Amino acid sequence: MKKIIAVNGSPRRNGNTAELLRHALRGAAEAGAETELVNLYSLKFTGCLSCFYCKRKDVPHGVCALKDDLAPVLQRVKEADALIMGAPIYFMNLSAGMVAFIERLLFSNYIYSDEIPSVFPKPLPSAFFYTMNMTEAHVEQFGLREKMAFYEGSAARILKAETRSLYAYNTYQFSDYSKYESLIFNEPEKAAYRKEVFPKQCEEAYNIGKALV
Image (cartoon, rainbow, N blue to C red; front, side, top):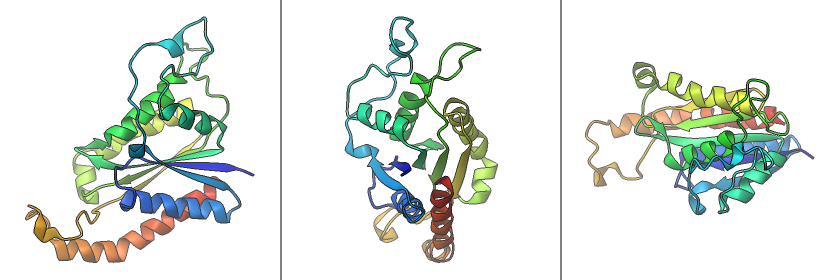
């Protein structure tokens, strides 16, 4: 049985990102896969410390030296058959937790060698789910796709398999907009957008999860 791991890079365990990931895992499960959801912000870990242990010649490559809550997750990712990474966009980048996860996963399997650029043990198809308050027009205006292309390209090279992406725009951020300084947003319009579009994005996530199996 194939194993699909989804990593939630949002501090909200029941927010937009988590919901998309659950739909993807449902698609994978209905296609016959075993699934696992990891909530990064429930773990205690750091990003890469630049110790270069993973590049040493006298130890096995592809192993991060840090022993924290993320270490067993990285091992399970190596044993999985597909990986889905979901993160909100905070201040024009992935959440800090997801960036740290990607640093630890990808850099430890990247070698400074033209002959062996990656020591990841097998091809691992992957997908990135992005949730954001920005509209699609904002994403194009600020070049976010180009920025995310670096992560996607790195994953494709180091994990040795194709990667997919899903952009969930214009997310509904608050349960009660009146409690927050948010006058630049039109809450009724955002609510209507979520009602119409978010179910379609959940369906897209479901289909990606199913396709990865």
